[in-house]
Amino acid sequence: MAVSSDLDQFLIKIDDDYVACSICLERYMKPKVLPCLHTFCERCLCGWVEKHGELNCPACKTPCDLQDGGISELKDNFFMSSLVDLVIERRHIASGQERVCELCEDKEVSHFCIECCQYLCENCERLHRKIKATKSHKVRLISELDEPESERLSFAQDVVNCQKHPESKVIFYCDTLKATILKLKPKEDCLDTNMEAVKKWLEKINSMFDQEKEKFNHTNINSTRNYAETLLHHANPVQLLSPRPEVTRRTDELLKIGDDWEEPVDGVEFEAASDAVISNLGRIKADACVKKCSIENFPKKVWKVDKTCLIVRTRDARGNDVTPRQNLNGTLNKRNGEVVHLKFSNNYDGTQSTIFRADVKGKNRITLTIDGHAVPGSSFEFSTCTGLVRTIGNQGNGKGKFCSPSGIARDSRGNTAVADTDNSRVQIFNETLVFKDVLSFPNFKNPLKPGDVAISEDSTYFMTDSGNNQVVVSKETGQLIRCFGQGEVKEPRGIAKHPIDDNVYVCSYGSGAVEVYTQDDEHLRTFGIQGSGHVIFRSPHSIAVDSKGTLFVSDFVQLGLVYGCDTLGNITMKSEALEYPGCIAIHSDGYILVHNGSVFSGNHCFYKLNKQGKIVSRIDAKEYIIRCTPVSS
Image (cartoon, rainbow, N blue to C red):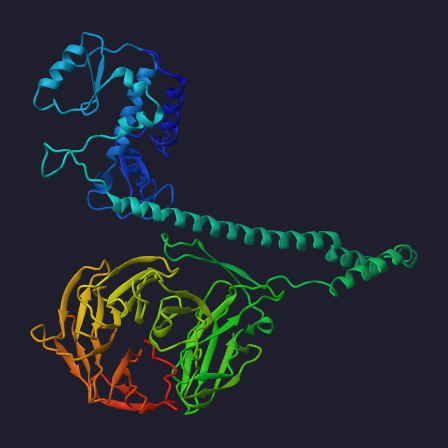
């Protein structure tokens, strides 16, 4: 029968691009798939191992560990086998040869069974549909084989039956595999970008080589010197006199070359990637010129509680940013005599960085060297200070100003969100604490009264709203997602997202309980009231979670307490009595920071509690107005 030219081209494309082994260049025979997903004939792989003694993928060189059974134990590529069969059948059709029924072997075919891969005449097709074992098979008219390309592709998809229920077809579609495949595209783009970067470096190095080679061929210093020496030692005075002006001129030209010659990169090497599946191919590394390197952010003053990032820019002799071959070394010499060796991370953009903490008050010193030579600016002194670090904003309703700020949170990118309660908004500041954006929801029944903020890993904001007795969920851009908790929370204050179970914990100040929700607003449980766990609150105000998942809740009443408990409300810690414990945060070293004080008391301070709830230290406020709220590190 006749087949369109489009189908011929389609079959040729399939044959060339998909069903040909790259070793023998023939259609696959018993195709085996390697762990790297490249496919080859079984006999070709056997020959490859016999020749090379081991199996590294012939296409990408990825090693493949063979089991005791050798090549035969590798997985068969059933899809490719089916595709080969399909191509063979399609080519037979395309050849125009008439086929006979494969059951009765007599009459002209009219149908094709996809699952049996058999051609059938009309009589046998009717019988095929009546037999119990084959009546559910997918049978197509021969004319349907000449369909548009998008439909023809579906014939290559074999029907697969469930292994546990052989009579049923598998209808499950793997969304996980689909998502995984989608992730490969950015990886591929990244590899292409890195490959282009490597090519540019290679072109630059070849260009430098060609320039120096051209200069050498043009000047040919060695040849000129040999010629002049030969004249000097072997020519007579008359023979020497004639070429002398030319030799003198040429020598003067050569001597001038050193005056404007630019030193090339001293050395270049390629640092190969340690893992074939990572997102880069490797890095070009070159010699850094120590005199051209510099310290980017020379700290004159640091705070005792802070971690400080120090950045060093590395350049070659021309002043170009490079990834250095040499090691950058640094030491922090503390005032008390302690010496800390700094570890630098290469940012692969011409900079290296290190994080340090100068926890000894007074003058400290940092020394930086490359191959034993001091980086310009090293060594340098800086002061470690204690006390108030910084005050953000002041009283008011403008950008960056506050009216009763009551909760604070920080996301993974360094943005800081502050619940500006009496201004009915949440303000967002960037990593340098400059005003960035504001979240407000004017369409609520009552004005928004945010008491606290929690931020998920995907920058979703969870805010308590005592004005409407609810939790508000929005995007960082201010787009409202949903509200929940109206049936459970009363005067909600503190909120926290648990780092282990990912649930949201809300302090219901008015009902004396902690309400627990999923991030999709499903209410899970209540604890803190009589009969719901061991802890009993009167007015839970603020909540924080440490890295191990322990919840810490402040009970804001006179002679109140801070409780540590598990996710079910079982007490694990009870603090010493505090005056009015309010906002609470967990420091990176495990200590608990609690703001203490209220409008009924002029005694505003922060308490530092240890893991047993004992008071370690106290920081008194200099003014009645609370200027800041601690933030979890």
